[in-house]
Image (cartoon, rainbow, N blue to C red):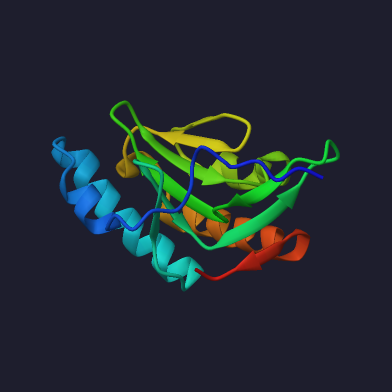
Length: 144
C-alpha cells in the first residue's frame, strides 16, 4: 500500500486574504459569499489547499491500486474563468438538484459556475449538505 503525496495539500494561507486578493470584483464578492455559504452548511472553518482551493474538512481515501491520501471534503476555488465547486461524490445522485440549480457545467466532481447570481443558492446549499453526508458516511473524515 503506497501513500504518495498529493500535489494539493493544506496550507497556512488565509482563505479570506486569498479571496480579498482577487482582482475581479464579482469573482471576489462571490468568493466571499461562498465562504459564508460553505461555513454555514459545513460548520467548519475554511482552509487553503494548494494556492487556490478553499476546502472544508478532510477525508482519507484508498484506491484499489493501493494509492491513498487525504483531501478536502468539499470546497471551492474562485478561478479566473469561473467558480469551481468541489462536490466530491460526483453528480449521479444530484440530477434533481442540477435540474433546479441554474446555469452551470459539470465535470467528474467539479461544478462550474460563472457567477453566483446564475444559480439558486438554496439548491447549492442542498448539494453541499449532500456532499458532506455522503463523504462522512463513506470515508474516514476529520473536521479540520
